[in-house]
Length: 276
Picture (cartoon, rainbow, N blue to C red):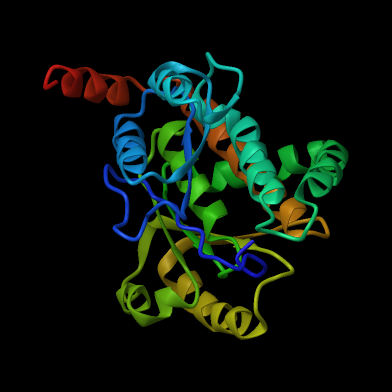
C-alpha cells in the first residue's frame, strides 16, 4: 500500500497518538477484544482531536464507545485468540483503505485469489512448515525480511513468542547492515536464521543478503530461506504468514505444549486492572 497511498499510513501501538493527528486524520481503531487499554487510550485522544474514526472490533469497550459517538464500526466474530483471527481483522483494514480511496489496487479481489492459492498449496505449506519447525526446535530464531515484508517477519516473531513460547528476534534488510551485522562475530549454535523472501525484494537488497548469508551460515546453527508463492503482494504475504503460523504451531506440538495458552499475558492484564 505504501507504493500507492498518497498519504502516510502510520501504525500506532502506544497509549498516545502522534501530535499531528487532527480533524483531517482518519484513525482506524483496531482491537480484537475491544478492551485493549492502550488502544482505548488512543481512541479517546482521537475523539478529543475530532479525528475521523472507524473501528474494527469484536465488541468490548471499543464497541461501546463507538456506539455512543455513532462511529462507523465493523464487528467481527469474537471469542477466539486474537492472533488466530488475523484474517477477520486484516481484511477489514483492506476494505477500509480501499473504500476510502487510499489504494488503486483491488485488494479484496486479490484476497480471493489468495484463498485459491492457499487451498492449492496447503499440503506443501504444511510439509515445509514441519521441516522448518524441527530446525528451529530448542533454538533462538533470528528472523530477517528482505525489506518488502517486514510485517510478515513481525507476525512470525509474535507467533513464535505466543504459540511456541520461545524468545526470538527479527530485523530487516538493508537496515540490519548498519548495526546488527557487526554482532555476527562468534559461532553460536543456539541461533537459527530464517529469512522471508518475495519476488518483490529489491535486487540490491537481495545481493546484500547473499553476501551476508555466508556470515550467517558460518556463525549460526542453520539458515533457512522461505520463499513466497503467488503473484501479488497480498498472495505472497499471506502465503508467508500462513507458513509461519504453521511453523509456530508445529514447534508447540514438538514441545508438547498448548499453543493457545497465554497465562503470562492474562496475569499482566489482571495486575494492570488492579491499578485502575
